[in-house]
Length: 290
Ligand code: HEC
Image (cartoon, rainbow, N blue to C red; front, side):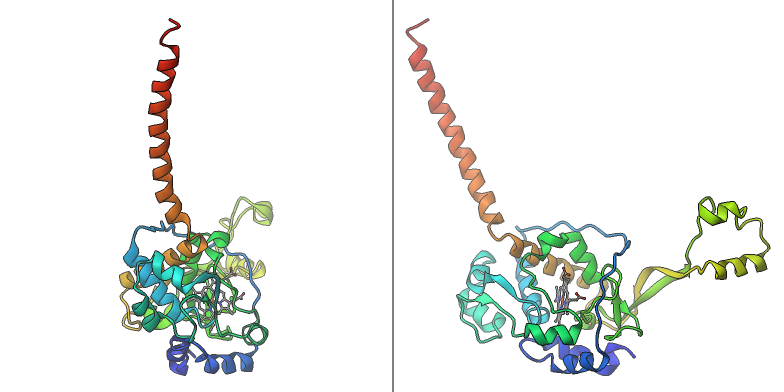
């Protein structure tokens, strides 16, 4: 059963304030348990760019539409965000504040913490610092690698955060992504028991299969593929959307970074000027001694 056929995804995208009820009921029924495990999924790198204002503006738009229903940004004010990202107050209030909050308030969520723990297995954490804690590469790959897994309570799993308790909220944009390139896990012939046994290569194919079953070779899928035509965005545009969200979260992690860079230039100019005067003064002092 995929999320799409249950009609869960449209509800999720509409979860601006409390529209997540359907999902919650669903998760209570199935008792979503979240056990985070380590992943060895190779991370694609992403370079945030705080000077790309258009990207940051799209990022905040996606964030309030798809994430803020569950994840607060409790150290970030709407007003500060609007000023930093160059969005006029009226436009911002009209299009990006759905919680009935005031412009000067912190970007809170209406998701109740206690209940959400029962609903999702883990409460959706505040994401103000997530880009600093997890890193932008991790975040980018996390949002890119949700895939359909019927065995999970929400019908989805994640390559970077296996068995995550979060539903795939971006599925309507990305489309249905599934595992691909599956096959038995490679066996290291030079390591452990296999080396002692003289390796697989010496075995007949039948014995080999038996042996493989004995040591329990898992099926392993090392890539993901999106089913064409199932998402609103093309692969390229979805990539850009995820980039924008992560870029925005990078900005939120340290909103003063832009200001600091600008100030830094002034400080250097000031020091340069000071040097010139100090040098002239120095020459003046020593002029008569030589
Ligand atoms: C329906 C509620 C819901 C929505 C909407 C949602 N999330 Fe989540 N998210 C969760 C839950 C629950 C967890 C905790 C999962 C766990 O620990 O297993 C989580 C975890 C995360 C984490 C991992 C945090 C960490 O460091 O462990 C990140 C990052 C994240 N979400 C980002 C997002 C982004 C970005 C969006 C918007 C595109 C979003 N989420 C939308 C429920 C949601």
